[in-house]
Amino acid sequence: MVVTPTANGFWRYKPRFKIRNRAIRLASGISFEAVAQAWMAEHQSTVRAGTCTHAAARLKNDILPWLGKRPIIAIDAPEILAVLKKVDERGARNTAHRVRGIISQIFSYAVRQGLCKGNPARDLAGAIPTPVPRHFASIVEPDKVGRLLRSFDSFNGTYPVACALRLAPMLFVRPGELRKAEWSQFDLDKAQWRYTVSKTNTDHLVPLATQAVAILRDLHALTGSGRYLFPGARSAERPMSHATINAALRRLGYETRTEITGHGFRAMARTILHEELEQKPEVIEHQLAHTVPDTLGRAYNRTRFLKERRAMMQLWADYLDRLKKTA
Image (cartoon, rainbow, N blue to C red; front, top):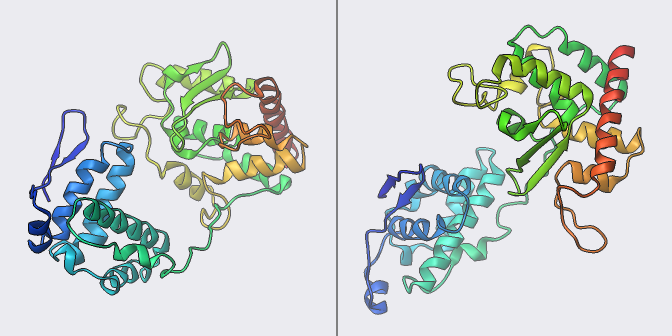
C-alpha cells in the first residue's frame, strides 16, 4: 500500500493502477489491496481525518492480511465471512461490523469502476450477530455520588488531574472534550466554554457554574500560559492522556468497568437532573449536545434553552456540593 504523509498531517493514499478498458480491468485480476488504496484516496476527501485514520487501521490490521493479495474478482462472501469471524471471535463484535462496512464500501467502489461485477460483502449484513449495547459504568444513586465526590479530596495526583476530576461531574462533557479543552475556548468573565463537539462537529456552549469558574481560575494560575487546561505529563504541547481520568478513578478505588468511568458522569447528570431535580429532558439533552430534533424538527442549536441551561448548571453544581457535604 502506498501511503505518504502530507504537510498538514493527513495521510495520502495513491492507487497504483489506472486501467481504462473495462474488459481489461475485469480480466486483470487487480488485487483487493490496490482497489482499497484507490477507495481510500477517494474516501479521505469526503470524511474527517479521524474517520479515515480508523478505516486505515482496520484495513491494515483486520482486512489486508487476509484479503490484500487476492484478486478482487475472486473474493466471495464465504471468504469475507471468514475474515469477519476472526475479528468477532476475539471479542470485537462492533469492529467486525465496521470491517464488513469497509469491505462493502470498497466493493461498491470497485463495481462503480468496473473492476468487479458485484458486492459480496453486502449479502453478509446480519451474518455477524448485532452487538449488545454496552453502557458506560456510572453512579446514579445520590448518596453514592456524594461519597464519590468526597473521595476526590483524597486524590494525591497532580493538581491539573485533580481539577479535571472535580470538573468532570460538574460539566458532564465527553471525556475527550474535557481533556482537550483549550484556554482560548473559555471566557471566565462570561462564565462560558465554547468548543466544537468532536462527535457531531457542531458548536457547543457550556454555561459555567460559579464553582466551575473558581476551579478554572485556580487552574489558570498553573497552566494558563499554555494551550491546554490539562497538559500531558510528558509534553505541555499535548493534552493529558485519554486514560488519565479513568486511571485517577482507579487510584481512588473505583472499578472503571463496573462502577464509574469518565464517560459515566454524563449518565449520572442525565439521570439525576431528570429524576431528582426534575429538569426538562429537552434542556438536559441540549446540554449534553445530543442532536435530538424538537417537535418542530429543529436539531441542536448551541444557544437554545441557554437561560434554562445556565440555571440548570448552577442548580447541578449546588446539588453536587450538598451531596458531598452530607455524604
